[in-house]
Each structure stands twice: as structure tokens, then as C-alpha cells.
Length: 86
Image (cartoon, rainbow, N blue to C red; front, side, top):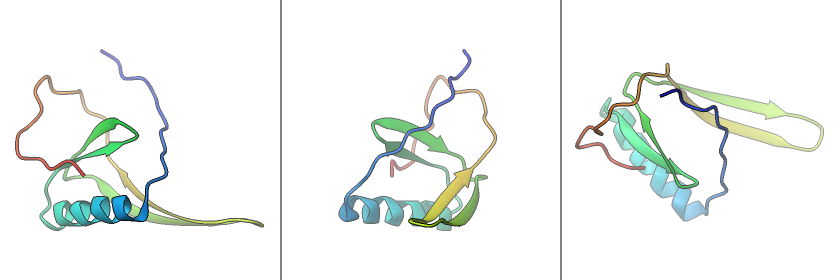
């Protein structure tokens, strides 16, 4: 089954962001895949994901974006065990 393109974004409280970033850092440090939930969508991020940081500046706004990117692979029918949800 083909996956539909999507672009989701949600504003989180500082406490929620801290918890997600802490678990993300733990997974990255251990070179492990992990799952993250964004606006109710669960996403599996493989250990081979590339991490980048982007800075944007325009006349009235400044933005820093932390980004993980990886090639799309077919969805497994059964989710692997032992992956933390961030």
C-alpha cells in the first residue's frame, strides 16, 4: 500500500519538548531506532537517519529546525519490539 505525503506540526509545552528531546538524545547516543509521536501520528525513525540542524532568518522571524531524514522503506506488518516512543 502506497503511503500518502503528509506534513504535520504541533506546538508542545516546554516540559513535553524536554521529555521528547531527552529520549531522542538517548536513542541517538545508543545508535538505536526509536518511535516518536507527533500530533497523534506515530513515526518509526531508523538508526541510520541523518541528523541536521537548520537556521532560517527573515525580516520578522528566526527559526532553528532540528531534522532527522531517512529513505522511505515499506512499512513492516509487525512493529519491532524494544523501541522507545519519544
